[in-house]
Length: 276
Image 1: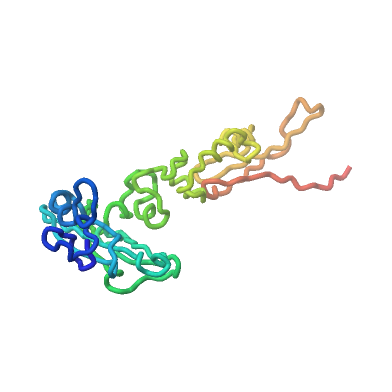
Image 2: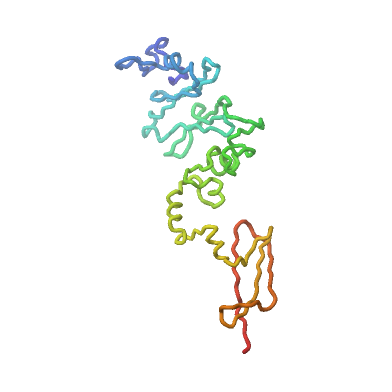
């Protein structure tokens, strides 16, 4: 691309377009923009092309269909002629969730601002290539009706809320699925494999107890789950030798609703004044 919104074309325009590769003493063959278009780009599935290193205003844009009838967005962007060697400007393209809209901007990290001229800030659309299986206008990869990787987190939550991969059940590859990390409050995009290995190597030190270890804390099955309730049975027993025991008094049974997926109970015996 040249800065007049046309392609470099030595055969037609010759030296009227400055910095055409044919104007340099380059060993071997060279191709300018028009030659690249004719020999390569127009025959293949290009959606966009980019080039720089052209002065003037440093911008150019041309939209033209390839031989298949699909649009090819061709862009020149160059900031080197600005002060400070470019003032930290960069060309940004933001691909929107609709799968078609692309927002183009020129942003400076030095000044924390955008250039607002029309050749620096504009939108264009791409042919819709992403799937919308239920034809609801929401592309499948961020549709709440789908869970592509079947990990228990729908595509919308993965794409919009958590930033995880809707087609990968363990986005960070640490062996802990996205759903488990989200439920636990850990970062599903940070690989915690090293930490997991360390904790598993010495679970007691790090306060990690398996389900069986917790069950072992209730050897007499004092606590029982019955439907949506937990039952607690208490029976006083008496002995004269700490070896042989017999029941004493009436058994006490306590029943209360289970509170959530994870809950802990303990029995506290209040001290009682005993009269000799």
